[in-house]
Image (tube, rainbow, N blue to C red):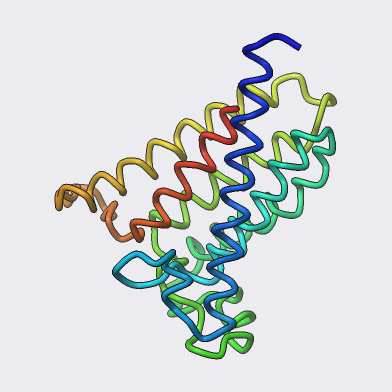
Length: 200
């Protein structure tokens, strides 16, 4: 294996581990009744429960891909895509909460599934993440999987970094139909890391 390939594998594994750790922190924070854990100890609202679960599964999937088990990334990809598309459909239909939020709401001790998980930008990022994982989960059966996943990863990383930049600078793209800073700071960083994992 060349040095470039080893670096790519190392980056993908590191990004996967980071996403899995962050997702575990978020889910653990909601279930333990400590929202500060779900916000990764940063000031501001916590990351949404559904986003945390999706990032946890995505991180596990990225690690599985590194170890030559790409099909294990399929559950995370399917979950992230379903949550993202469900949020989009709920907004288009004018529904206050989608089915996934209702499904997981009873599992939380502190509050129902956070609305941040269902925001427009977060929904788009979840769909990008899920589609990238599904592409990689096809393994060698799909020769185009790498460029497709890389393109989706680049878009995901760009959105994540843009939303994080908005938080750091106080600037916001108010001309868009969505607000980039509607995604929490820690969530944007996590999505950017996941995007870099898809690039790796």
